[in-house]
Image (cartoon, rainbow, N blue to C red; front, side):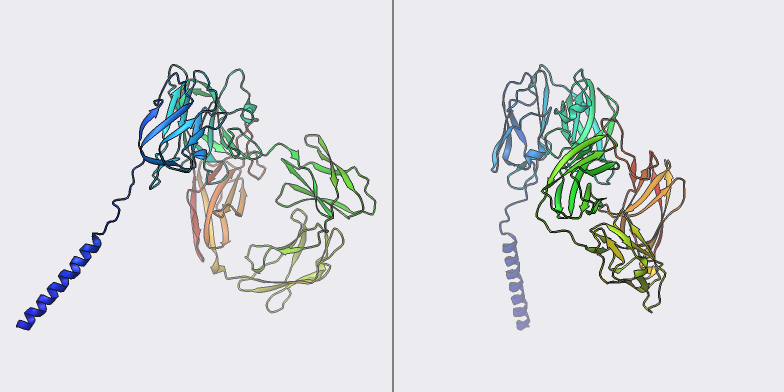
Length: 539
C-alpha cells in the first residue's frame, strides 16, 4: 500500500511539472494581437472641404506611422493636374502625407483627391481605403455624383485601373478632344471592382468615356488604349447608372517603315485594315527575279519575298486602295542570310478525332504534289487521304477519317511541296495516334431568353484560346462533341451585321461593339460524359 501511495505521488508530481512547463511555454511573449486597424486621418492642413483654396501644399496627419504604396497608380485627382504633384514620404515612414501642387489651379473648381489604397500603416500594411480630400477654389463645394460600371466588351474579365472620364460639352468641345486634353473630371476603377463613382461634380452636359490608359497621361491613344463610351449626352444631375463597354478600336490605317528581315524578305508592317493594301516596287526589278507578297499569318505584316540580287536600296510604293493613300519608302539592303525552308507539323503524337493534320512552312508554298504523300494504319493498310494547299495559312493540309485506338503513319516523299524559290521538302514521316471515344466528352447547349439571330456560339479555354465555333441563324440544339476533358468558357456573339465575326466599336463614328454574353460560370467537361446545358440570355 505504501508503494502504491509513493507511485501515485510520483505521478502527481510528474504531471504537475509537465503542466508548469506547458504553462511557462505558453506564457512566452508573442508581441500581442496582430494590428488589423487602418490608419485614421486625424487632421488636414488646409482642412478637408476647404473653399476659396489658395495653398499649394496639403498635409494629412494620421494616428500612427504610415507609408505610401503604388501612389502613382492609386492617387486619382479630379479634375486631373497637368503636372504630377510631389508626394512624401517616399520610401520611408511618417505620421503625415504631404502633397505639393505644381499646377495653376482652375478658378471656381472643386478638386477631389482619392488616394485609393496607397496609404497603409507601417507595420501590417493595413490600407486607409479610398481616403478622399476635397477642396474648392470657389465659394462652394460641388456635390453632384455619377455612378456606373465598366466591363470588357470582348473578354470575360475586365482590366484593372480603368480611367473613367467626364468631358464638359461646351462651345469648345469636339469628340477629338479626348486625344488632346485631359478631362474635366476623372476617377478610376482601382484593382478590386469595375464599379465607379464620379463625385463632387457640377451641373451640366457631359460626354462619359472609359479608357484603359496605358500611357498614364489622361488622354486616349487608339493604338494602345481600350475605350468605352455612352452615346448619349450625360446631363447632371442624373440618377441613372451607366454601363461602359470597353473595347479596342481598329486603329487608323498607317504603314510602318519596311525593313529587311532576311536577304530574300522585306517586312511591311501596318496598323488598321489591309484588305486593299498593295506593295509596288518603284526600283526596276529584273525579269529573272521572282517576287511574291503574302500576309504573315496572325500578324499585321505583309512579307515581300524576292530572289536576292545586287542593289544598294529598293524603293517601294505602299498603296491602300480603300482610302486612296500612297506612301513611298526607301529600304537599304543589309547583309543577312536568306530564309531557308522550315516545316512545322500542327500535330505530333496524339491527334483528336475532329482535328486536321497540317504542315506549315515559313516560305510561301507555290505548289503541292499529292501523289507524294500517303497514309497507312497500324496494319500498314493504305487509308484514304485528302490533301490540299491552304494559301491563307501557308500550309499543306491532310484530312482523313480517324478510327479509335488507331495509329497512323503519314509519309511524305521529297517534292511533295515546292516553295517560292524552288526548294522542296525532304522525306518526312509522322506517327499520329487516336484515343478512345470514351476519352472525350460531349456538350450540348440550348439558348433561352432574349436571343436575336444570327449568333456565333463559341467554346473557349479559360485563357481565351478558341476551341470550337458554331454560326447559326435560328434556334437549335448546339452540339460540341468529342471534347477534351477540361473546363471551358462559353460565349454568344450577337452578329448584328451577319458578317460571321465579332466587330469592335468606333468612338468617333459612335459605333458600339457587337454584344457578347458569357455563360455565368466555367463548364467542366468530363471523359465519357454527356452534358446538356441551358444558356440563359438576359436583356
